[in-house]
Image 1 (cartoon, protein in one colour):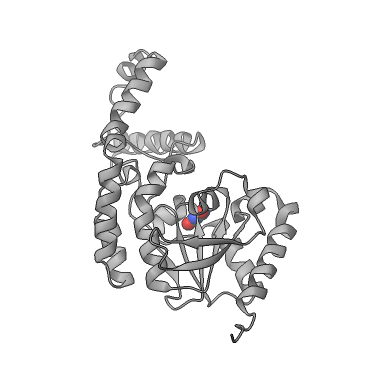
Image 2 (cartoon, helix red, strand yellow; image 1 turned 180 degrees about the horizontal axis):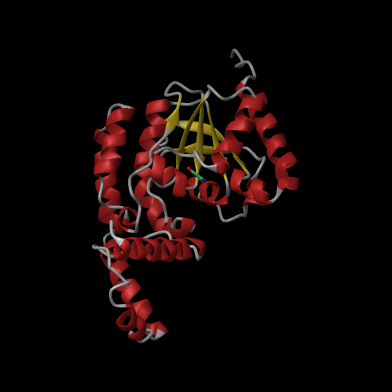
Length: 274
Ligand code: URA
């Protein structure tokens, strides 16, 4: 590359670094825009009034919002047809009904862990590292989760997934509609694994899976019951704190550890013979 090309590449790298620092980590356009070739023009575009911007966002979301019922139906059909975890993973990757798939995610992120695990862990949704690597909980929060699981002797006894299978842009919390559309796949995963217990990590996963309004500080450490829509499978479920929260709030680690010990005690409690 010549001098001019190198300068452009440096400018581009610097611009990308600036955007990354500013938290811009998802692209919405169909094709890349070279902002270096027409910087003035780009700067001259007047800011949109809030009402217009909102209308544009709603217009973009409308096809999904109006169609959420049929997206859930389609998810049920696709998830119900999957008879193995590999088929379920493929069905998720092929599914176009979740708006998150078209908001900058680079791939679907299904699950990792032991397919015969007695424990299924459900988190909120993939972050940047998970989006890049295609597996849940592989970033900083995932490393902390793994440490806690290891300390509790659970590392080979878990199957880990999320309430949604595409990264929400900017790591925002997934909406209830996004979680609803992904839920049939999550339910199928529970059926295929048939774990003994479910562990929900964080407020978003706990509220979504339990249909609860309470905050995580009130839900955590308490046993609830999960069942599918037809009540064919009923499982004990324990919400706990999200490892990303623990990274920001280390003093809460003892609460999470208490929850994990509660969880392990029930997991290893001998079944009562009737
Ligand atoms: N946080 C989650 O809830 N899930 C992941 O997979 C990663 C981070």
